[in-house]
Length: 335
Image 1 (cartoon, one colour):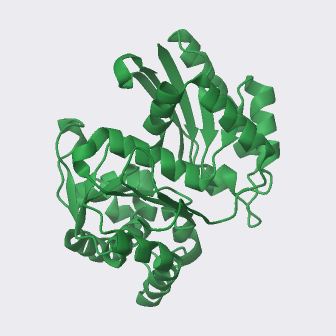
Image 2: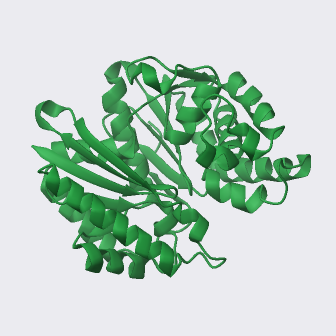
């Protein structure tokens, strides 16, 4: 069976087409469109008309590509940049009207659950009690669990692009006071979640997302050209040094560092500060970098729970109120 997934994030729209027989989603074709939606969000959080039109065009092209590769209509979702927009429903209506594809926004805790599932399937049961961190453009997802799905899932407004705009946009490179305020905000948002992770004492910590992959490369992990099966670890102390390196350079010069791409250079510092602060507060000395993330989580859940699961996701998304800036779910008391 062939399945396609479209993910509209803060920076890019990505299409993954995968064969999902045998219990493993094997990609056969991927495409991305660099829209940088987060740069077209107004002071009130609304996504501008021109950016919406570009999103509609990208999703339409993704649907056409999926059809050429003989995949059904894509499982399409948008992350924090659309989820938190006051005109979210208008954006989704315009995408549906212009493409025939029903795109939804997933609650932040659902994103955390799906990314955790992807990490669990990639790392296996030998990972034991597992903590998962994923930094996006608009939010940070955290999850912990001992089984297939997490016991604890949280989504916090600590995305790399969001924090760059709120705290690091005045000076390039930023000054000490800006970094101090940024760290204070991160510690405040992470306080309760970090306490829970410390209490759980995970055997393995995993990080995913493009932000963490680039930071791991900056910290000395193998380059992407070596493939997904190379072990990539990132130590907290190395990430601390990466923060110092990034903070001393303007964005244009950060893009010359190993692993830091030009489009993400400006937000790389905020991502590094979030990552280092989170690992430190959670008592984690380091983490393994997982190449699978939310898109693979969607594919896995679709494979394992069937098409009705996605139908339920769409229905719940269409009836839900707009997500708050931060969400938290804890399944039962700590065990």
